[in-house]
Image (cartoon, rainbow, N blue to C red; front, top):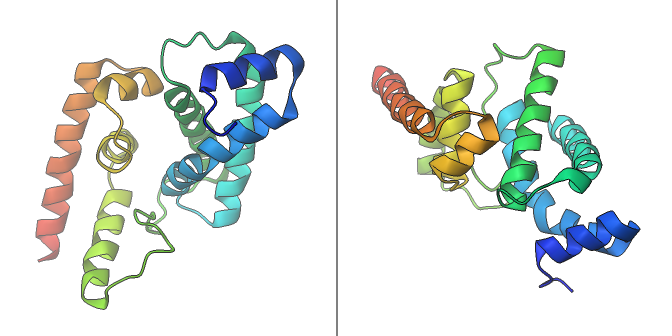
Amino acid sequence: MADTPDRALVERFVFDRNERDFRILYRRYSPALSQIILRFVRGSQADAEEVLQTTWVRAVRGLPGFRWESSLKSWLTGIALNCSREHLRKVRRHDSSEPIELHDPEAPIRPHRELTRIELERAITKLPDGYREVLILHDVEGFTHLEIGRMLGVEEGTSKSQLFRARRALRARLVERD
């Protein structure tokens, strides 16, 4: 059942509200969505979990209208980004200096690399929202510019130029630190 294609799971869930199919989708996508949300909300694990639940509530409501013009993962990520933005507006944390997590919290950290990771996270946190979103979605999460454009509602070329500018700004911030 874990290898069941997304489309079959979604169709069965939409048709007969099959809870088992939803649980498979939830287990399949929640870990990645949680990481993305945590990077964007720049808050606690509890904040990220709240945004994840909101994401799934909206996804369940929207599944009957999902047209498969993009992958389910891209669509869910777009919902997660919108919910993350709303959360940020609600708690007014745009100027927070807390670093975002860019690594697996379970992974061992080598002490001589820690300072660099922290500096990188802080520098990324200080990027403008649009730059930060594209940088994380492309360089950390591995989405294509076409997918990012669909998620953010921008042209593919805009995603590319924002990534270029984000990298340039990030490089400048890191050079300033030296």
